[in-house]
Image (cartoon, rainbow, N blue to C red; front, side, top):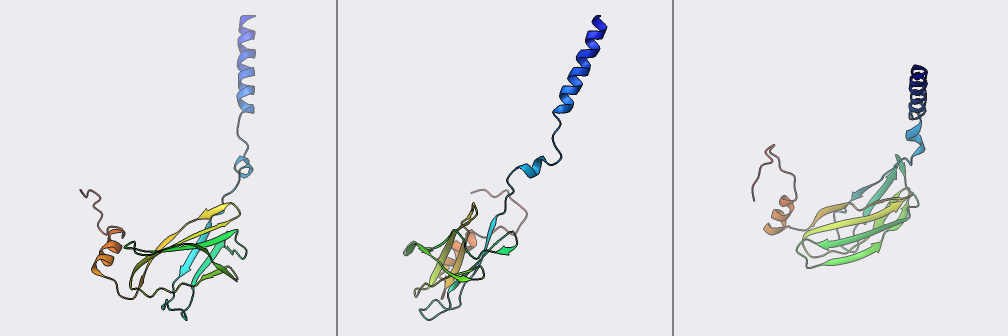
Length: 155
């Protein structure tokens, strides 16, 4: 009787554990991520008559023609200028444009705040207007990745 009970217990546990096996399509039951991507094109001239900053948004390999929001923030590297977020204009075909009159030479940064279908991105890109000062070049080089394979730098 004791042996029969042991065999039945083992059979029950094997059945129970077999029922706990994951489904083959379990990954499809979860929300699939589709990250938003932005490609920024900076104009050669930032005067009032110059070309606009262009931001091309894609998601799942397709252009995003009607993003939930696209805002642009620009500031100067030395802290002397900071322009709060402003909405970019939808130019169609996944292109969003933004005009800014920047007349003072120096290192600037642009940050795009964009969102679509639950995906939000905020890429930041440095860019130069006119001639860069030595301090601007050094600041830009400080953010560049090290070219050597030695990561044991001490500060």
